[in-house]
Amino acid sequence: MTALAVLTYPNIDPVAIELGPLSIKWYGIAYMTGLIFGWLYIRRLITTPKLWYGGKAPFTLERVDDLLLYATAGVIIGGRLGQVLLYDPDFYFSNPAEIVKVWKGGMSFHGALIATGLLILLFARHYKVSARSVMDLCCAAAPIGIFFGRVANFINSEHWGRVTNAAIGMVFPNGGPDPRHPSQLYEAVLEGLVMFAIIRFATHRMLALKRPGLVAGIWLIWYAIARSISEIFREPEPGHILNIGPFTAGQVYCLPMLLLGIYLVWTAYRREGSEKATV
Image (cartoon, rainbow, N blue to C red; front, top):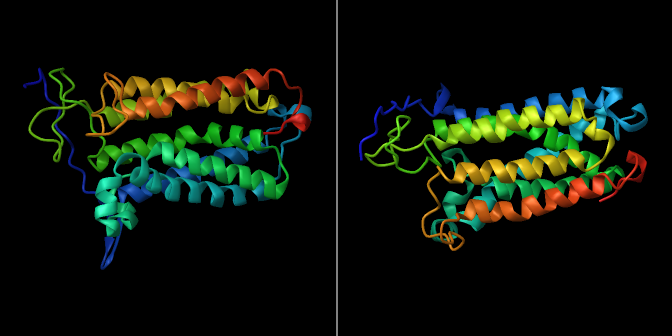
């Protein structure tokens, strides 16, 4: 299959910095950049009184530092275990030493989401704050990390798209000789940049943080839509049990996200004030 105008994969060296035996990869830099920028953005939201019910944020700046630790653990541990359990258990159980090699790539968004969600509940319980407001803050910052994560997928030449004869076809070094959709970049735009714009409008125009759970609900709904669109162009996980007819495992995993998002939006409008917000 020949594309009308095949783009050239930039073939970026996955190692960004190499100092003797120490090597730092773009993959790790992308994840840490997303987490740090997300942490800074949450600090900015916390210190903007007009965004909060009664002008008071649900917790202090000191707690934001603790939240970063919880989120980092959820993203890294959950992302990796999600890839192992949700997408490629046969390979990893046959090669258990590969499970810890996070630097080689292979992180599941849905796994990271589940783990981070559970740790948010633990964080809220431990510090006695509204779990919904914590979810809102994390979801407001998440598009930043998702954007960098998808760019990291592109640099790592993983999770590429389906074979195409469109003008945007790109031959990936480990994707065979045929041009493919650079679907990682589609996801970076839809799940990262567009998502950030939507959530920013919600927080600063709709003042959605005053209704705990609303931002998280909007985020879940849009992610489910954006990921489902991207899956049309992304190569499905081969042989996955949830590749059902025209639907991919990624789309199936997004269905409960969509339903939960609708529930959170609906209940957010039935509540009044952050003081009354619970899980």
